[in-house]
Image 1: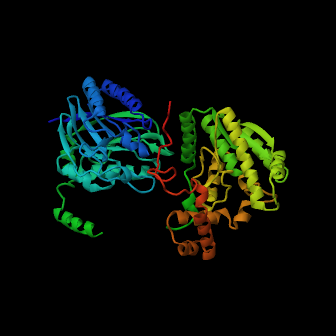
Image 2: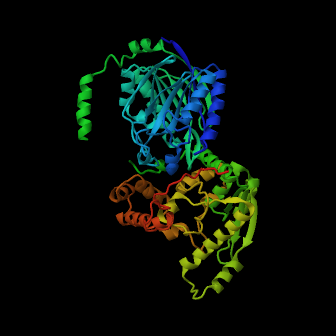
Image 3: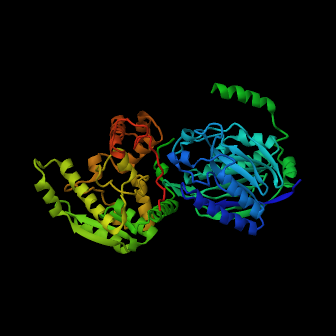
Length: 277
Length: 282
């Protein structure tokens, strides 16, 4: 069992549709993170392609595993580091179906991936137009801790992180492409998810401007007690590193016993009522 | 939601930062040498010019002053030049009277005084010159339109709105006033009545028929899905006024979009052929 892990949050800006360019940026961040002794580095949602890809989404999709995961796996191996990043996944059973995915790779290769469950399709967001939603909440028991992943808008729904936590996740990686008009929501919700689940939340956001949308950065690691351990700059490219101490979790679970006080019967009622909404 | 003036308050510095970042980013991505915009001496164009200069530098910002005999006002010229000096903006001054007269004379059945038809020729002639300089100097054209005027359609289709970027188009007029003050636009420019300068003595508020302070709150209510009776009740204005603003907003959609076309193909430009702005092609 691992007690501590050093996390790097690489809030990059992307060149829309240019995977080779974005991969080069990622490689630079990975080398720098390794130099600073990071065990894992996180990149934002759809970091491989940029977020606002519109109809180019289809041509940019790749299977997992696929050419890009292989290249990232090579970088993970060379730098002996875990990597989480976002990409457009082409479904291997039905090629016309695509997903918004978060991929976890270790120095030994691809560990697994998560498909975004909640696809925002309102305001300027049009994810349901392109992606099929995910149905699974895998937790990966790795050499750097028990890791669960969510993507951006998922953080608005406490059920997802609760499920990951109940499956044993201690580090929730939330990769994001959040535009600046929504900064306030994410600052509140990321802290809430950490505190209500007594887990670490590592939030990494995109920066830069795509189609007039400005992404605000502000990536952060939040401790199980809701405290922000480290935070990256707003609105500009940045990488920040922080150390997670998993031994803090049991202490916080005693002081803020949200898991002890869970009321399962309410979930039955929630289930019924949400169907009738 | 309560429609009080406070709902229109903006974080001035943050808004300035967002707009200047936006301009700089798009200039970089499109690899142009700068930005050109019309400078009338009014609040919208003065603010846009200043923000552009703050973003990419005055030496890469071109202010085109295009006055003509019927609407020329010495104070407006002075104001435009004052802002250009203050933010070190390059200026090109053209008297477009001859150009306009040539168009009027070359147009069979030209029948003034049809104010709108004639006025729109002025706006489109200004656009023509802006694109001439944009093409010859490798610049982006920037429109100074604001959200109030965009929403009610108070602009000339393919005229003052024709541009590559619209940095302040998501700000209501009263919000532009806040931003203008913040970046140091002189009070005399902020406080004088706005005019599109399409015919003599034209003022925007007189033509729209409602002060911007009220108009912006009505539009803000519509933006936030409020019903017209609710807006009228809160602002203590006749429901007829709110409904007329709503009608103008709905009727003007054709001015804000690509031309309407029938759906015939697999993917159709302007409908379901969606590509990102930011694809950088080598």
